[in-house]
Amino acid sequence: MSLQSTQSGDGSRTAPPVTVLGVPFDLGADRHGVDMGPSAIRYGGLSAALDAAGVDYADAGDLAVPTLRTRADEATDESDAKHLDGVAEMTETLADRVDRALGEGTVPLVLGGDHSIAMGTMRGAARAGPLGVVWFDAHGDYNTPTSSPSGNVHGMPLAAAHGYGDFAEMPWATASNVVEENTVIVGARSLDRDEQAVLRDSDMSVFTMSDIDSRGIGPVVEEALDIATDGVDGVHVSLDLDWLDPEDAPGVGTPVPGGVTYREAHTAMERVADRDAAESALRSLDVVEVNPVLDTRNETGEKAASLAATALGKQIL
Ligand SMILES: NC(=[NH2+])NCCC[C@H](N)C(=O)O
Ligand SMILES: [Mn+2]
Ligand SMILES: [Mn+2]
Image (cartoon, protein in one colour):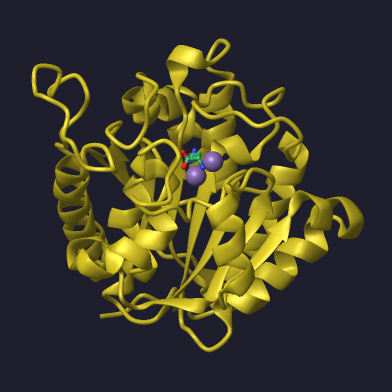
């Protein structure tokens, strides 16, 4: 199976094609509406942006996953993490679909949905071999059912992928080829107390907003990519739209003031694209947490579309 981009006869690089997968999933979060994220990103100009980037893509439509709406009549489960059975079903479905997209020689671009969908993307992508992760997020998403203050699984996907804590007993949730040393969180500014302790002691790297303030977005993302790609042959990039400042991206369920600007986010995605052009580093990408119900005229959906295209090579000139 070839995951690498191909080298054309004249020596120029041809980027691998992209499979767009919508995952209208919201069982990992409290705020209704994030299930409409894939529609909002598509309506926000995704295909035009990918065309402008010269990306060869196919939109595979939306995956069939359970949602708050389809489960409205069901009693909520009593566990510390809400809707874990629904998350398990989504994870399995998405992992298989991502695996298939990779097997076809494409890079999956997964549109969320709340951030728990990254469990499925990483589980699928990691089947192809050891995987680094760059997690652009206001949050650490390193809670467990025991430590979570909310019980919302969108605050847990990184811990789940690593099989950390309670997740050690949930093999369905883990992505065993995700390498902890190659896992990097960028732009964190809202960490729960237990998350702080775990992240400090772990082999992961965390660049906070204050690192970005003092060093600048470009150098921070370059170092994050160095760490994530070191010794592995692919990275998963996960872009939570709440990474951006709520002034720039209001359509998210858990906004945190003090985030990166839209321009800084583009710079970050440009660095991802540059690294991919040089090293074929990008195995998979997900763009999550866009909630059009909370948005202003689909501003966040449009920005998500544009940022995704930039990560896949769209340039200004
Ligand atoms: N992907 C996200 N937006 N996660 C938000 C998590 C918020 C908080 N840390 C929690 O566990 O509930
Ligand atoms: Mn997140
Ligand atoms: Mn977040």
